[in-house]
Amino acid sequence: MQPVIVDEKGTEIEGECSGYLCVKSSWPGAFRTLYGDHERYETTYFKPFPGYYFTGDGCSRDKDGYHWLTGRVDDVINVSGHRIGTAEVESALVSHPQCAEAAVVKGQGIYAFVTLVEGVPYSEELRRNLILAVRNQVWVVLIGLPNMALYFSNKWCMHMIKRINLYFNTTYGNTIF
Image (cartoon, rainbow, N blue to C red; front, side):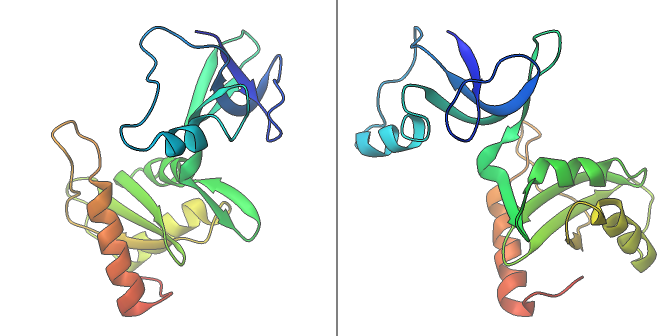
């Protein structure tokens, strides 16, 4: 297995860089198709960068040659012409000392769902402070929840969060909570 980092045009990038993680050649155990939808398999994994298997991940390589995954590129949101990863916004939120967890989804705006550190009460001032924590990156809608829905693996139930987002989008439109 030979990982490579490519730019938007599919050109391999050498040295210290950031781009898209691809695999140059096949490897044992690589799947060959999607059951019942080979066209989708080709479109998803081979058409974005012909000649490479596209993992769907952003990646950077440091000066020592180590690869660092930067997140799923399908979780990138275009805000006023700027491409912003949901992971970047989540990271900015959880860097706040009173925010324990955060999940960000896109809709008509960007919606952040947060769980506060135990014992910290929700307040309008805290909401404003959390928005300011990411304001230099994006415009964000913040919805406070008492607890987050997690799978047994401690991963977010993103389908539930997206449903909540859809509800707020259709009920309230582009409103800050």
